[in-house]
Image (tube, rainbow, N blue to C red):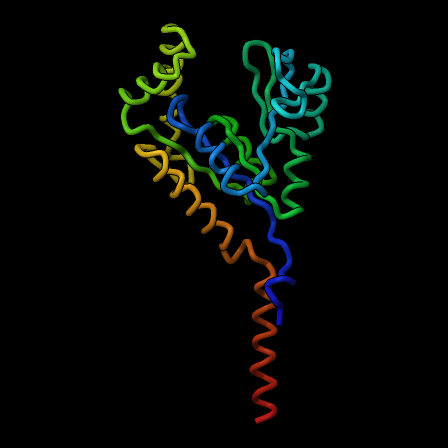
Amino acid sequence: MISPAAMPQRQGLLIILSSPSGAGKSTLSRRLMAWDETLRFSVSATTRAPRAGEVDGQHYHFMTHDTFGQQIAENQMLEHAEVFGNYYGSPRGPVEQAMAEGRDTLFDIDWQGGQQIRNSPLGAAVISIFILPPSIAELEKRLRTRAQDSDEIIARRMAESADEISHWAEYDYVLVNDDLDATESRLIAIIQAERLRRSRQPWLTGHVRALQQEFTLRGALS
């Protein structure tokens, strides 16, 4: 019989977290990383120049346009997009390595990136979760409370939020972030349940066969 210590590792999951700006996605991502230190956060690649204080491999993987283009051509980007003349994307190699190690990877990306990953060869391992604000008024309040952006940028973010929210039905799970602690608890419950899906535990087949062999042996001895 298989003991818990001898259970083969499950394949790692790809956890996609999306939301309009201000709905709490980044805060929830940090909380999930603190909850489970085995979680790997997907560090995006970009062709833009590093800003003051940014560290290569920690904040972004900084690449030249040529290198990034080669990565796309070789199907080494799970998702990518061009924003104001620079490319951003999620490298495939580190994600596949984490999957093989039984570690889950967390993606903090928009609906377009999530759609590309769901349609990629790794799509079967994806869990997608969308975070909604309790109201548009509350969303704008949170953006203004951060005191990081001008009125013009806030107006642009609000307009982008309308498009982002319109894709909510494409996700496996949708949570309304009306209370941060409660939303965190629901997120953790989702991840724990997904990890326990029968299809994600290949070792169970061998365990059941061992149980059946025990029944057969008992019958032969009785």
